[in-house]
Amino acid sequence: MIDGVATDSSSTPSSSDKPRRARRTRMTGAERRQQLLEIGRTLFAAKGFEGTSVEEIAAKAGVSKPVVYEHFGGKEGLYAVVVDREMRRLLDMVTSSLTAGHPRELCEQAAFALLDYIEEYTDGFRILVRDSPIPQSTGSFASLISDIATQVEDILGREFKSRGFDPKLAPLYAQALVGMVALTGQWWLEVRRPKKAEVAAHLVNLAWHGLDGLEAKPHLIGRRKS
Image (cartoon, rainbow, N blue to C red; front, side):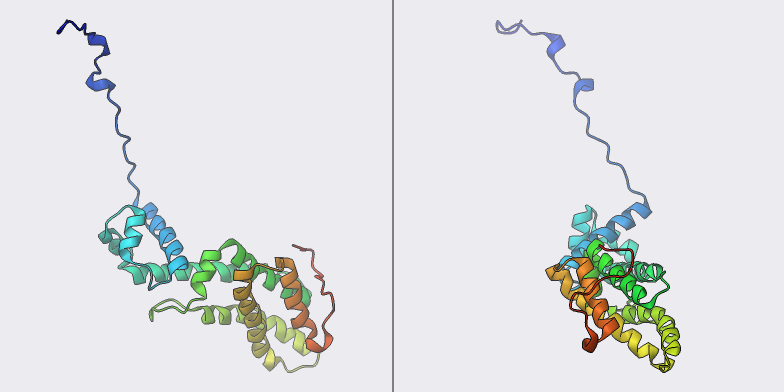
């Protein structure tokens, strides 16, 4: 008893009863690199290359600036990897979608692939449509569009030949068609209306019929309707 107050030794917290701090799990090098890529991707999409700093990337990741430099050599290196990944993803989505035999349905599939990418990977598309400020970057949106157009060149060439048109013009039409879809995609990125399937139908309507033969209510001929 101390000063008339009884004490109970059992109520006194021992060192073993004190709450322990949760041990922080250390990331592997690969995990840290992926984390930085995801943070960089989000910031570049929201603020652009110039508006994003290494300090902000490091702070979001909970690391020091040297860690970012260690993995990517700086902001430029991180940006280049992010752009390269997004370009490959979009190109893969477009090329893997071209499975139909009918040329009109191929146009539908290409339109859907780009619109799917915009819908599912919005941050990536925002990054791609900005002009890269890095000369050593792996590419630009313009070069990506050119790559996609090359994928449909042969398809158009065969169709031109079968209809008696000059197949040498296929590259020109491929660039025009893919460019039309890409620019419309940039617009749709912000407005998101009409619905994706309707946008695809109107794009193919213009591409397939031309202004002279536009259908009043364009329809999709493929199995996909949304």
